[in-house]
Length: 397
View 1 (tube, one colour):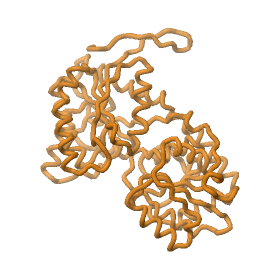
View 2 (spheres, one colour; view 1 turned 60 degrees about the horizontal axis):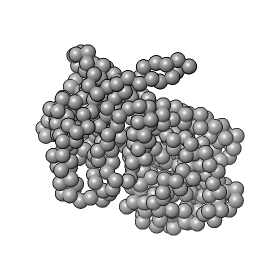
View 3 (cartoon, one colour; view 1 turned 90 degrees about the vertical axis):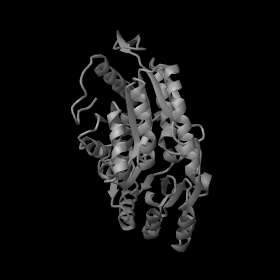
View 4 (cartoon, helix red, strand yellow; view 1 turned 120 degrees about the vertical axis):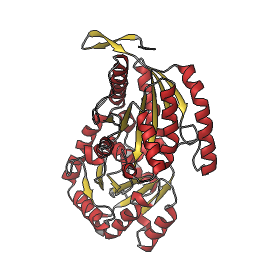
């Protein structure tokens, strides 16, 4: 196997050989700071290296936040032109690209997949967010690009069963694997005083909304629910994040008379965000955006929060109602308010949910997830060196 060497790992006191892999991984450029990949991909790279794998990285995707489309396209052309030299220099066993599935991303990814195949390297593509409805698009250009991507990709990783089912339904699709994002559980072992920090009365229930502020994330529905909530509960909503919807959301809170109980923090650092997950009581995240693996929800598990959210993709795969969350319909402030009143009115039930969520978070421990990704690399390479024909449609790699 090209580039693979043997190292020793100790399991239950016994030494056993571990296959190490040379990986070229596409990661967000230094100027691209938003979104889940910028949070968890550095952890994945670090953990793969700690396990003995050789990981080289290259910037993949936008170079910075808010790039104009012409500039973004020019940057992607430069990246593609440089790509063959990067592959030849790093000599990877596997190329791993982190991307999404939408029209802009597919126009970039299909040529990269074709180039990877031309360079003789297996390709693992991980979608961190996707819109599977585009698989049924009738556009000839779109169908051509999807066919190009699928024909030159060894395996695809998606973050939910819903996305996997959509991919596996396509007769030309490569093997599709449901994967997870990792959590650094040590980041969530803290007890910050958010009441004192934000001037909120001691003992007041703290609700949390964390996201880029766009309409489909459901912030306006959460704010409207604050107006419906029983006033005696005295709950406060902390909103972390910025975006185009902030102006409208701020005006909505004032118009509904809840501005004194809705606290807009703007963009916050990752360390401060971890404080929020550990110091609040309940996450309120009524999103109807096409989330893949919403890190807001899964970081809330690690912080031991109660959760009120919509039943969407990975959230529906891993969380159970009422053990881990109360699921509500999209665009339904009344249902959000009712779920919050139920949890805040029964602190025993809320405490049980919070404890269950800390337990569930262990399934996403960062080193465990890195081991699963390394296992995918090994399985891809085993098929390659064995000269096996392409896996049957729908079969995991």
